[in-house]
Each structure stands twice: as C-alpha cells, then as structure tokens.
Image 1: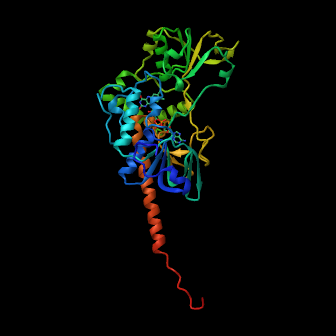
Image 2: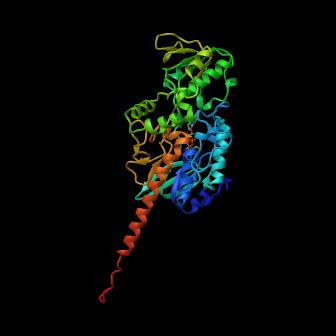
Image 3: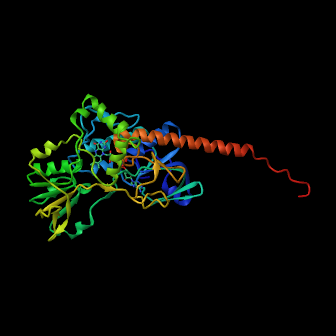
Length: 391
Ligand SMILES: Cc1cc2nc3c(=O)[nH]c(=O)nc-3n(C[C@H](O)[C@H](O)[C@H](O)COP(=O)(O)OP(=O)(O)OC[C@H]3O[C@@H](n4cnc5c(N)ncnc54)[C@H](O)[C@@H]3O)c2cc1C
C-alpha cells in the first residue's frame, strides 16, 4: 500500500469488489483531517481519500517564504495543539509537518495517491470513483479545499509571450522573475506579500487592484481575541456585514490584509495602480489608459472551485455548492467542510475549520442514528407471512 498512515481499506480491494464505507471524506487537508479526527472520536467508521502523495503537500507546494498570518496558538485543529512557540507565525513547512503528525497521531485511515474522479448517487448510496477503484458510501464529506483552479482573465493570452506570467499558486521565490519591472495583479494579502518580496529583491513593482483595507493591529493584540471574535462570530452568514464580505469574496475580491499593512507596501516604494483592464500592443493597460512596460506579471487573483467531478445537481450558477453551513441542500448524506466562508470568515482557516467539522460530524452521527432506528423499526415491524396451507 502507498501510505504510511493507518489504512483499513485499500482501493486495490475495491477494484474487485465495491468496498462499502459508512463515511468517505474526499481530501486529506486540514478540513478532511479535522473531520476525520472528530468522526473517529464519535466511533464512526470512515476513510479519507487523498489525491496527493503526502499529507501536507498543499502547504509544502506554496511559496518558499510563506508564513501563517495566524500565530500557532490560533492555528490548531481539534485535539492537537500546534507545537512550538505559541505566539510565532509558523512557516508553511511547519504547517505541512503539523498536518502529517496530526494524521499519524490521530491514526486516521488515509488512502494516499487516490484521486476522486467522479461522485454519483444511486438511490441512497454514493458511488465514489477514484483512479484506483470505486467505493460505496452512505455519507460523503467533500473537503477538497477552497483554492482549486487559478483564476486568470482570458485576456492574459493576448500578452506578449516575452512577459513572464506566474500565478501565485505556482510562485516559489523571486528567482523565477526575470530582471526588470514586475506587475502584481491583485492587492489582497497574497498580492501585498509578493509585491513586497519582489521589491525587496530589487525589482520596481506595480501593485494593481483596489485597496482591500486591513485588519488593524489592535484586533490581533490580547491574544487575537478580537480577530477571532470578528472572523468567527461577527463575520458570519447570519450577520449583514458577514453576508456583505461573503458576497465580495465569492465575486473574487480579496479579503482585508492581515499582518501586512498598507504602510509596509508604501515603505518598499511599490507603486499602487488601479485595475488592469486588458492589453494594448500586447502589454497590460490600466483602466486610465496607461500601458505598463513590465517584464513579468504575478497573478494574485485567487482561485476558483472545481466540482466538475461531482455528478449531482448541487451547484449554484457561479459554481459554488448550494448548502446550509456545509450540508448539501438537495443530497442527503452529502456534506462540505472547508469551503470559503462556509459559515463564517474563519471557515477555511486552520483555527476555524474545526468548528464547521464538528457541526458536520454531529449531523452525520444524527443521520446514522436515524437510519439505524429506521432499519430496526422496519425489522421489528416485519412479520413473515404465514404460509397458507393452500400454497
Ligand atoms: C497563500 C495562502 C496562505 C494562507 N494562510 C493562512 C493562514 O495564515 N492561516 C490560516 O488559518 N489559513 C491560511 N490559509 C487558508 C487555508 O488554511 C488553506 O488554504 C488550507 O490549505 C485549506 O485547507 P483545506 O483542507 O480546506 O484544503 P487543502 O489544503 O487545499 O486540502 C485539500 C486536499 O484535498 C485533496 N484533493 C483535492 N481534490 C481531490 C480529489 N478529487 N480527490 C482526492 N483528493 C483531492 C488535495 O490534494 C488536498 O490535499 C492560506 C491559504 C493560502 C492559499
């Protein structure tokens, strides 16, 4: 088997006979692992299917200098504190190692190198088709992450091929940038951080995009209590301000800057410019008509979701699943954990995903109790017909 984790089912077995699992979790990132840990505490049998070859790889693949904007003490999953100095901001590799230790320490059943290609339903049963065989499940939790497909506008293909274009998802460090001016498109946290990194490496940098505001430092003092109050309790789907932020994020706008401040951008001499509206003479052109003569572009324009492999009518026209706090509206037994703003701004954060996972676990446990009761009462009301003597 390809995993060092605790495996009870193998997709290899599934190729010969359809393995039936009460709960399948698709995706072994923080959302899938937190849900797995809570299901195992509830003594529910489940399996995590993970496309990657190692737990934590979605963090390992991110750019070299990336650190969490949330300190260790606010970046823990249920039941397992983040190790080390609690007020420090862990590196992306420390997060990856923490997730791997979490899977091992919690003895979670994970199938690595197992990509789900299709999710279907036949009557009450979900059919999960992977690159290595199929499974049947009563419940499915989709935890494939909030950042799946890089968002790049279609006019990018009109740019001069000499301009090096890199999306933040593929960016590692400034050595990928050719000498000369850099245009960073998207002024959210990622754009601000990468603009500062490029400027520190000696490039003249333009940062394009609207000012997204920033979380004031005061919100992060006193152990970040105010920050977590805002992201968990105030910025939720139940409050008007939360719904406004949700709408903006869903439309592709960046969230407010955390840790990095507008003055950090100014100090580096980065020139803030408006939106890029397209190309002129194969160069990026701003809405005010100014053409930027740059050698490279860093796309910090975010990611979209991709549920094309879910063959069920669960999506709104904009590609987001129709759900209530993670419970699919039209498909009983289908859940999501880790969606952007699934319930609140904290839903896709390390320190917030556990709360959503706990709610989904509770629903799964209740659903399983209900179906056991239904089966038991069906059994107890079943009276075998007495064979008539005429038969
Ligand atoms: C640049 C950046 C910085 C961030 N900084 C912070 C921070 O400071 N603090 C914080 O709390 N959060 C931060 N986040 C947000 C969030 O914590 C991460 O995005 C996190 O990776 C989300 O975890 P996840 O488990 O939901 O998704 P992912 O980590 O993306 O995990 C999803 C998993 O599902 C697997 N998968 C996907 N499709 C399939 C399939 N079809 N079959 C099987 N497996 C599949 C993937 O291989 C992956 O392992 C940051 C995000 C980014 C992008």
